[in-house]
Length: 420
Ligand SMILES: [Zn+2]
Image (tube, rainbow, N blue to C red):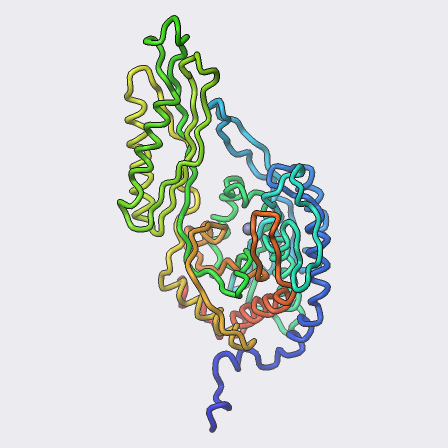
């Protein structure tokens, strides 16, 4: 047997599936057009009307899959206003599709249909620009949802009873931290063998294998107002207490490998002849591993307590590490190797790299579900009016997901080696 006749895993994986791969190639324009249509619908994370408008075509699109479709209402989440008051904000619903929940192999496919662009933002309409589709959500991640659904439809079209069942979860709050959909992601991650999430791959085609964990915090500080001219000594400045806490947080940078503390904003104060009574210090902590996250959060609590102990000052810490780290552990290495095998079957040499950014893949991993979370189209300029998806990558990445599902179905990727 010559070397090129050897049955490599990649060769075995692609065998017999050529017609389905060709079909996905032929769908390239349809996928781009679908993404373009969805991109034109504003669905900023706080735009309840737009999110509802966006759910209509999504519900229509997922109806092409077998299984039960539902809209799951989400609980309100808390936000700290600039004046320090904690308020509840409403969210859109998640869309959930359950297909073959009794099947022995269960896959979690997740995505978000919100974008970072509010309705008032000037970046609203998609357009074609050479090899790119530009527009809000073109890559992050309306394009990703289009890729996911194309792969699932191709998978459903393959003959035979299926051993792979799955749940699709499309959420409206990823860009603001997934606080409301977190319980759904945790429940899904706890029962699925493998996770597939559709954040965009990088423009050079690379995917992400490991992610830092992240948490947003607000230190709500209250002092005592006083007129600067008449009773300066009676005042207790919330802004100064917040500023000192900010410096203490910043001084933690560099103390532990990869753990970062970023002071993002201080809200507070009013006129310069008044000792400020209220301030809110907003900061983010990121860590590559669980130990660092625990340490970082404990340090933040220590600094909050020190602020609270100041004369005339009360300080209350709001928030936490809500996206735990997703380290490159053995389970994660295994699913990366499967993805590379699926890429090989398509003639792709897929590269992986770590990221400091966070996504639903963090939530799934925290629930014990190894996952690849950059299965969407290749793109860049995310979260800006430079956002684009590469048109040629829509079919390519749909084929990649299709082959991963097929590998699970054919037992080439053995989920029992991932979790028991
Ligand atoms: Zn995203």
